[in-house]
Image 1 (tube, one colour):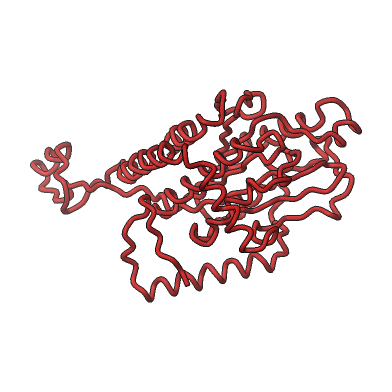
Image 2 (cartoon, one colour):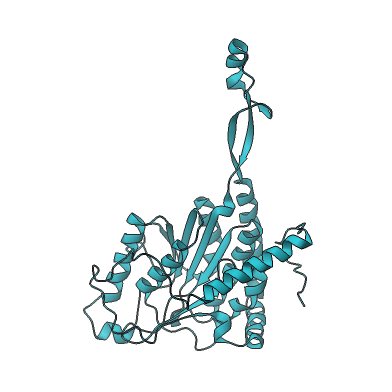
Length: 334
């Protein structure tokens, strides 16, 4: 039985009952089609690793899994409750930030005018034309910005250094951001980078798919704090993978946000390759995405400056500044 969402961020839902049924069927159809692709992203090869002098020893054991495939529903619910408990001291502040962000974003829905209309708000600049030529198209109307043609992907660092409160804070911020954007009909996806190496196998985790409603994915956010889940990151491959997913969507505007607390690191890959092998790959992927691919890339570094990789990035000293930094910078993108 579906429970009522009493979250203060939610707006009153006036959608007719029959339309809810249609939406659910469309979401189920999307998820079925996505699962039938065997999680292999079919997209043009926009980044050729051969050009970047980057090699993969084997991808035979690589996996892309949804969070609900990694743990049973009861365990995910338990982890979600623990996440809520662990972040009680921070939730009030983060909720205020989320509300402020939502109000600013709602205000940006109306930022331009349609001119030359026969009714609406009088356009004083067109009065001269009306007097001279008796033109009736002298009115204007506020034009609604099409926010629902936007998708936002969050790629959150799942390295071991994020364990404890940092990953919990990141999970809660992602949770609140997802709620706000979904309430404004902006689609979101939440992913993690792969782990462990590139000599060894990798695992991409999808905590929330773009068209999956928040209420269905809510408990998945708790998986991020599961003990033993966080390993090492291959950031270049993670960024390339997340970019392919977002580029495969039909949304006009695509925003990809990376949250990380360090440089790419996998001990076995680093040991068996030239120095800075993984860093060089990440830098090359960033350059390709920023200069040749139609998406907006932004990064937040926690205790680490990411500007040598991402042109558009900010750094914060501690994880408790993540909420304000994310919401303040995301509103600038809209």
